Length: 554
Image (tube, helix red, strand yellow):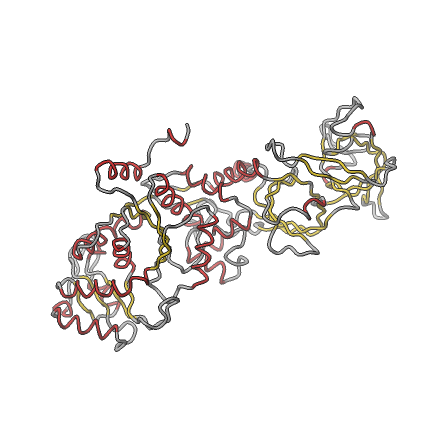
């Protein structure tokens, strides 16, 4: 089924109905992250949805930072979010901030006060929680709700002027203390915070709560379809109440299922905990579910977009198998990654009858890409192969190198093992082979057929490298619902570092942002830790889903 033939999701149905009825001539969406951490794969789903809908229907998307809590927010996070959205392949129509609207939001709160729909409350947070009752017991208003609009206006102006300390007073909307929806029981819309804001500095010491700022920011920007995750369903009545009472642009909120993925945490609080407790190496650790971590690991943006499209837009939460994301990554990299030969656990092979100093062979860059071209691969008398590609006493169906046995070297020649060299302790130090000159790949006239093909690297031309084998950060599928502390389930084998690795020299000239398939090993990308003396590569994903086998075994 082509993308044009795909059935519409429920949000697309709403948009098409709104456009057909003339309710909206153009749609406007927004992506509104709070700049208090790095974005993760769950945010990617929201980004792809909001920007994708606007693109599909000829509308636009605003990038709006929900920066109403100066204590947790930082410009570092703002810049990382912008980089992530751009890297995923999207451009926003406007870069906006909730703090752009602080003056307007303050005036809107004053308007609610003047209408008798908001009041200043001196109660503590604990007292307010008790006054709100429980889901089965209605709440009760306190004496502060009886203040006149004039009294409340003066008090709110004094709050703004910095007359009171943090926590001394709040502004509450006056709605319904008996509502079955606890969020409508006179919710707080403003609080005092004497804290430096990353954009407005020390101008403000009162800040709007998210539920008040969110809807009114949407309204100010004339957002037609405000798309949130399911946890915001109970917040929608307050969203609508504020718009109705303030008579602002009637933005409407719609909710979809957030992304929950196996072997992963999606909580910013937990991700921050992993960073702060140094259980990972920063927000961009390749094991993290952050977009920056996935980018560093080598996940292509196109694969993440495809994953988000495949999981679709649902109305009910479910747990998505991370294997689907890895499948999308493999599918994309198989088409785009350059092929290179890299030996992880080297064993030296000496070709005793090779009498040339060296020669240049050619090998395809990507057999899946007709325009991928070829590269030069140097060949010489001494080469490195993998230790596990040699067996001194082979099993019955062992088709790799063994005494008296022949194999083909990828893009090179057929060789035959003639002798095994060992040290005084009986450890194999090198293998001596002969080669068949007539068996060169692409011009083989030897008539010899072998079943095994090995990757290799010329010893005299090899680049020394470090390889980091990343795996899933957690051992359990459903981390959020696993017993105990989530950190108890960290996979101790999530990172293996190989430091004695030899790579073919073409890698030294490849662009640092290129993706590679190391033949027979997996997909890799160069890490930012690389230096002129040592290249470092991160494993993006294995060639096959090895975890599926582990689960079956278990």
